[in-house]
Length: 176
Image (cartoon, rainbow, N blue to C red; front, top):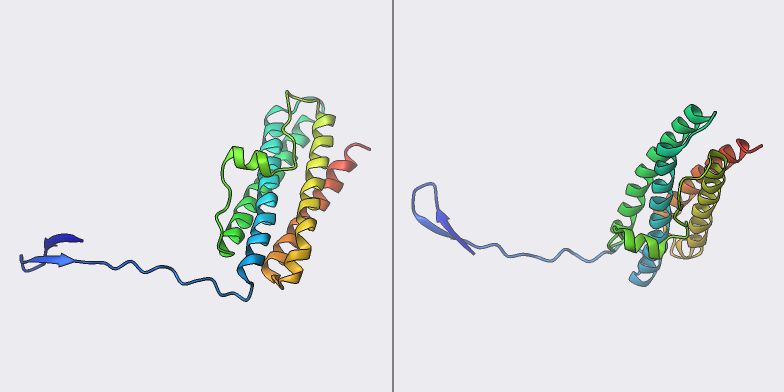
């Protein structure tokens, strides 16, 4: 409650009654929404971890392929950055908080952190593995998404798998 002056100079008491947000009624029960959100949290952690790895490699790549890899990695990390937001927003739309800290991502992610600065070919190998890991994580969520008839999450997963499978193929082609 706050007290203030009205336009006429008279004291007025303003009260605001906070109303709770209405419950989520999107045709998916809470148990299924929670299970989907948990799966998407793993996908978010994998995507963010792969973003960090790709950005790191963009900064630190050296050798005869420097320019092409530097630019390729930049394109990839920019795409991953946008994906992180889309995944987190889907988790929120399902009614759950999106994980957002390094320690949470470390617990949820299947992508290992890179130690040191590997050679360019090893960077490419690690990124192929990371791209494929994200695909496996996305694919693992499908059974609950399909059972719940959650088409928006299915669409998001399909889009992510297409991007990561294509990127893995392109990276793998650099290795011969």
